[in-house]
Image (cartoon, rainbow, N blue to C red):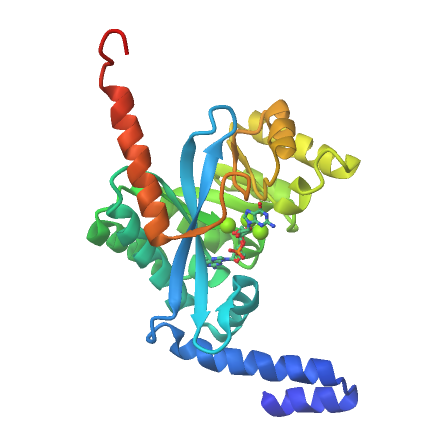
Length: 288
Ligand code: C2E
Ligand code: MG
Ligand code: MG
Ligand code: MG
């Protein structure tokens, strides 16, 4: 394989490309040891109700603390993990760690975990999820799995079968990055989604771009008619929130409500939420 790549670059030599290829294989090597060296960490980002602004859940986002390069973003290492097959092992670590961390929170806040294509075509996957839920003690209703259209397009009937098995466990399934893939409408019809996540690509220009406005509006109407709740990703401004609320969007996720945060921070936040809730539950004394 290295030889074949060398042949390619010789045909059409490009120093930048060459450097990139070397970078990638170096990263791929490091990725092999990242798990056992404990270099991965989970971050959590809030998801909020559009109307009440209350926290409805969190998305789990993987971070790689590389000993030399510092934090490597998922956009750089997830594709490599997928190509090398390492994503199966890494993905299992993510689910195990997220379930154990969330099970120890003092309030039953939901977690949404990103799932790669290979995980969804692995027939052992549902049993792994079932086992992990039992061992961690996490209520299956608190676990949502985010899948993308590319994640199911490879083998639709196999993916559908696995998704049905997962749903029987009581786990929820979300369609991630909606609108950026190929088979949106057919997929919506065939798959039993519990949530549709509108991609940031369409949210970022809301109110400033007619196409974005139209796509978001149409998606929300479609989801509403199918009885599937919609979450908009990448919500950064009050203006975004206002426009999404006007369209009837149910939930949002984005920098407006918070950056992804490490496990200890989300834990303290959930602890505060739990305290607030029990505060609401206790009747107030007269005159208070
Ligand atoms: P995603 O699942 O669509 O996750 C949302 C991404 O948008 C996250 O990027 C998040 O940090 C970012 N984001 C959230 N709100 C905002 C905002 O208001 N503005 C902007 N500009 N960005 C926002 P992140 O953490 O870099 O992850 C990128 C992608 O990597 C994810 O996209 C997901 O596809 C993948 N990924 C992350 N963790 C995992 C994992 O554990 N397993 C797998 N298979 N993929 C993962
Ligand atoms: Mg996601
Ligand atoms: Mg997304
Ligand atoms: Mg995305």
